[in-house]
Image 1: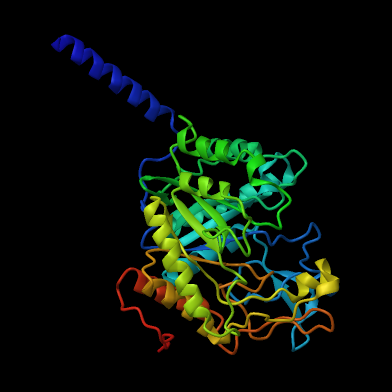
Image 2 (image 1 turned 90 degrees about the vertical axis):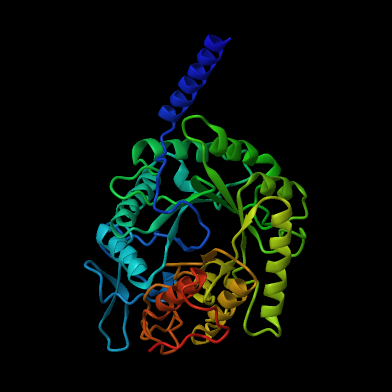
Length: 421
């Protein structure tokens, strides 16, 4: 009997050892949990053209904020002029030095890290996938260098109804694990884990304006793969859903299948951009109530919850090109010098949130960026831009860092917007 038990134990050890050897993820990281962290979304899609120019034609500008480029090693000319009539210059996300600078800022201001957006179209083999992977590769190196958390967020934008499903996302995850060791980067290991496993986010489930049906895209197969595949799985999963995912109304599809998907995930992230505005009465009461009820649902279903915060919104130039029949005003959701951003942060923290998602780090297309932007954007008869309300270019980085201190309980949470000394 004793020999039999020993044989069984040895067999189990061999099986477990074999499974561990097959799995490609690092078992260690400096970021074992999302809890206690402020993470931001990172687009990384601003790329200089082959002729070395960015936005050569002011009529084709799709961004509503202009970055402060004074610290970049490389910048590129544009077709726009600054107020002093000098050429307005822009960075390129494909430059290694650009990514390095952005992660340096994260460290300097105490922002924990970012989710690297990886759009559905980049999951297919081709030049776009290669370029996006190079950006991600540089980000992994910078994250290790500055000890910042990093994770992949698959954005299903681009998935159509023409028989496409999430199969290419599965193949892309294999590609990232094999080609750039995405969850086992060289040097300091900083890939974000949650519940003891590498975290992968899937964004874009349950939005009624999407051309795909969540029942027909193989989302359960994707989640099962990420969780259970012996080589590429063993991951935790975060799903990005509409604000009103719990009640299945308003900005959300009225399909209870969404709840089935969420219950299979480890974290749910409701997308709250444009859903709340400082221009409406009692918005923070409504924001608080949604968070509290969401957290109650999540606790009952063993799903963790991360609320979304954002500094403001503007997509005048983008709407002018894509929706000329419905052009949006500049700064449609005003920042109010950080007041609106801080109202959300303090409300979320006082409601009991133990992690935050910031939309976004570098998103100047929709005017939600928190990285350094200028108060003196280009002057144009066509394109229009928001400014920083005369706040310093690094103000939102600093404000986010203050929120991180409060989340870590290094400082008490305050309803009043912090004053910079």
